[in-house]
Amino acid sequence: MIKYPIGIQSFAQLREDGYVYVDKTELVYRLVSEGKIYFLSRPRRFGKSLLVSTLKNYFLGNKELFHGLAIEGLEKEWKKYQVFHIDFNGSNFTVPGTLEQKLESFVETWEREYECSMSGADIGTRFAYVLQRAHERSGRRCVVLIDEYDKPILDVLDTNIQVQAGNGRLLEDSNRDALKGFYSVFKAADDHLQFVLLTGVTKFAQVSVFSGFNQPADISMDPRYEALCGITQDELERCFPESIKGLAEARRMSEYEVKEMLKRYYDGYHFSENMTDIYNPFSLLNAFASRSIRDFWFSSGTPTYLIRLLNHTNEGLDELTGRYYDPQEFVDYKATVEKPLPMIYQSGYLTIKDYKLSRGTFLLDFPNNEVKKGFVSLVASDYLRPRRESVNSWVQEFVDTLENGNLDLLNKLLISFFADIPYSMRRKDNERERERYFHYTFYLIFRLVSVYATYTEKQQSEGRVDCIVETPKFIYIFEFKLDGTADEALRQIEEKGYARPYESDSRRLYEIGVNFSSQSGTIDGWAVKEKTTGD
Image (cartoon, rainbow, N blue to C red; front, side):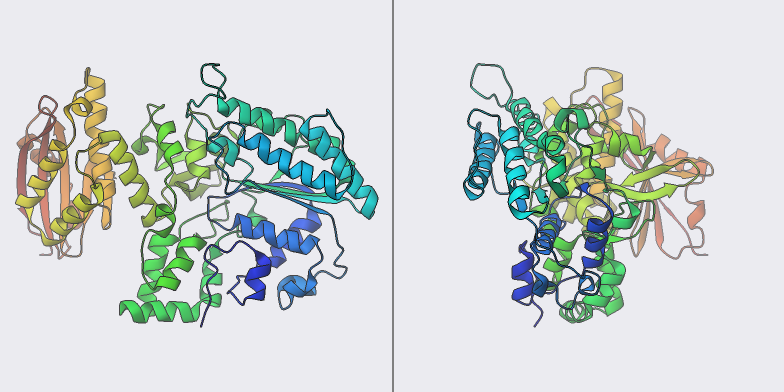
């Protein structure tokens, strides 16, 4: 029976208790052999903590845990180092003073262990002295591993929580300054450091957190280390053949169909211009353990800080996704409330989908169906704020209706969705806001229902189609008008020949003209024409 290490972040427990392990130790050996101070950004639940634990056991010289792994044939010495492991997981940093208490607890413990103290000194200076004493005592430089270095900032980002009620100082600024003082140790203690790794979700501006810190090598988009966390296609097929077979049997599908489904739902991450497909390990392991396909990763944590950031910008998901960017815009650029793109990408809700070598630019979009469905649903609920409790239940009914070709019900469902949006959200004061609300609302709706092939703003030879949805039996071509008529919309589909690419298709094709009234805030015109295809 295969044991899946879901929620297990301890390398020692994983190896001792016989859990399945995707061998990353060849990459680990390269990492420790070729550099000294590193930073790695990966989405949450992507294996960062397990990587840190693996490195900790390697530097502690626990050779027996690596028996049978690639590193066993690479490492000859297995030296033991003093390892300082700092883990910010599990603490709630929205409570003022929590970060300071956490840092104080770490340093006090080490001061007792190495019998040293510097009374009156700041926390960073005290830690630097601990590292010096540990180096002197052992004769070897020290290893520092920091897991989720940015959690104390992400927890309070854009929350306006104050350090003390009424004093005006934000907890976000306080936590950032505390980390800045603590991380300054790496410059002062450079002679005493053998290896340093910081992991996190986001890369904040160097000047805001790492001032005075010897700059780490950012390997987040380094092609050599893109598979350091996550599971590649080769690893999936090599390490989990029995799991794939079991899932296929449970779902009464072929193994090929299961692999295609896993790819649609959990694959699609790319972390360099090599474009190596990386699966989300948390979702993949949960799917194998439960023998079901569900939204495991997305439902394990709500990205509320990203929703707060999106509310600060005039750009919606329709403007952020499906575009090519210079890496400075989403990797190296400072992540702020005015520029949410770096944080959305680094948090795993967008990923690289293409690379243009000639320009050095990257196409960003949703990695897979799990993330697209969950994130768009969350954004839609926040932006539109429908009265219905669950957008997802409406989406399921809408998808069923598309699948069955019921045009009257399709119209009623769209009208009911808009009717559920409070008037305060629908009312827009100027033409530009009305136009943006109209386009963004339809974009969100059809991204929500894109369980089938869905194209919004699809470019064709004669123009740009508002929306095309393809199901196994039907093709729907939508054209939307604002304060016009449904007949005008339908006429545009005809005149522009939007159905022409489907002339040899055997599925039934419907051209649908829809008019949206900015006065009523809902659909007030609906015209349908069935086209004969496949002749």
